[in-house]
Image (cartoon, rainbow, N blue to C red):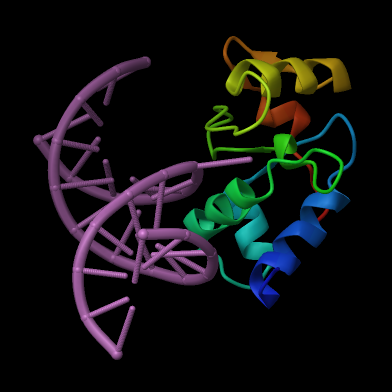
Length: 103
DNA sequence: ATTTTGACTTAAG
DNA sequence: GCTTAAGCCAAAA
């Protein structure tokens, strides 16, 4: 299953409130590894199951929607975020408005 | 145990 | 604003 690192990442991902998003770097920072943004992505790739962890609420540092292993990929991810009320700026998420500030 | 790969990020051209 | 390069961390081969 999971290492302490991935478990921590999942735990924080589940804390992201509906309608808000967090960046990979942000979760990495919360997990105590501010430079492990990449590892966060790797962890997410292993859990493309929505019910377990809302990995669709995790976006890149500039609000871009990168990878998604479930559904129709990015399209599904964007659709879910829009449905949750996340504000979009064209193809990217408007972090100024929708970034989770639970630090 | 070592190498490769990737859903990252920041800096520089 | 977009492309390239380098740095970082963890999982998979």
